[in-house]
Length: 419
Ligand code: SF4
Ligand code: SF4
Image (cartoon, rainbow, N blue to C red; front, side):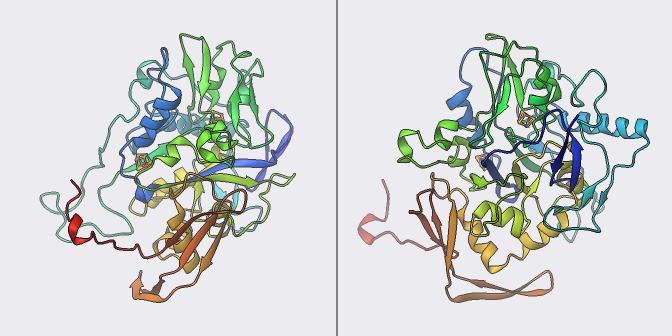
C-alpha cells in the first residue's frame, strides 16, 4: 500500500490509494458543550434525504448519548476492541508521543496502528458488519448518565464541580466525516466511492454500487448504510447542492448543510477550507474554521487513531473524564478545554458565529468594543470585551454581524403580549 501523510497522526501511514488532495475541503465543527440533544438536526436530515421506502432505519445525522449510546449500537467500542486486539497481536503499544508538537504534527505523533495498517489479508481496513438489531435506534440509552459515586446517599454535599463531574453523559453529534483517507472508498471493490476534487465531499456513485456492503463493514464510524429497496449503500452527501451554492435560497454562494442550519443550540459551524497540494490547510487565520482548529486548537477530530483523517471536529465537553475524552479526541483534549474554558478575546468573538447565518463564512473580522467584565477563571484573571464579530461569505459580502454581549430587546408597551 502507498504511504500518505496524515497530519492528525503526525506521520505517514499506509493507505490503499496514492495521496491526492482536493482544492477545498468540506469541514464542520460541533461544540459538544452547547448541544441540548433536541435532534432537530436528525429530523432535518431525515426530512431532506432519507424519508423514502427502505430508508426507515437510516439516520445520516444522529445524536447519541455517550458513554453508553451509539448508532449502530456499540460501534466505537467494537472497533476500539478490534484495534486493541491488532495491537496485542503485533506487539505494538498504541501511544501518542507529544514531545514534538508543531505545525505538521499539531497533536504529536501516534505510534499505534491505524485501521488500514491493522487490516488483515481479507480487508483494506479493519472493521465489522453490524447486525440489523444494532441499527434499530439512533439514540439508544438517551440521556443515560454514569453511576453517581458521591456521598452517603449517592449525593455529594459539595455538588458537582468542573473540570469533571462525578456523574456524566454528553451528546455526540455524528455525520459522515468526509474523511481525507476514507476507509469506505478503500474498501469498495467496485470503486463506486469517490472524493470530489472541488470540495472533498465523499459520495457513493449509485450507478456503480452493487450493494456488497464493504463500505458498511469498513467505515470505522459506521456512516455508510445499506438500503434494501435499492440494494445499494447510501451515506451523507453533505447537502452538496447547498455547498455548491445551487440551492435557490443561497443567492449563488455556498451554504451550510441542513443539519447545521437548523440547530437551535447553535453548536454547529460548517464551511470550506483551502487545501495545499501536500494536504495541509492553506494558512488563513481569519477563516473561522482554520482559526478554531489550527490556531486555537479548541476543536479536535473524532478518534484520530483510526487514521482516516476525519473532517468533522469537536469542541470536547468540559465535564467528562479526561481519559475518556483523550481516547475519543486524542491528546489535544486538555489544551482544548483549557482554552475553551477561559477563551482569548478573539476566540470568544469567533465562537459567536456558530449557526448565525445560512451562508458559509469564509472570513471574519473583529471590531474592538469596551471592557464589560473582569473576573477569575480557574484561578487566573479573565476579562471580557463587548467586541463585534463580522462574518463574510464566499463573495466577500457581509453575512452576519454580532456583538459578544447579546443585546436585550424590550417590547414596546402597546405590544406587551405577542398574541
Ligand atoms: S466517515 Fe465513513 S463513510 Fe464517511 S468518508 Fe469517512 S470512512 Fe467514508
Ligand atoms: S440540532 Fe443542534 S442542539 Fe439539537 S441535537 Fe442537533 S446538534 Fe444538538
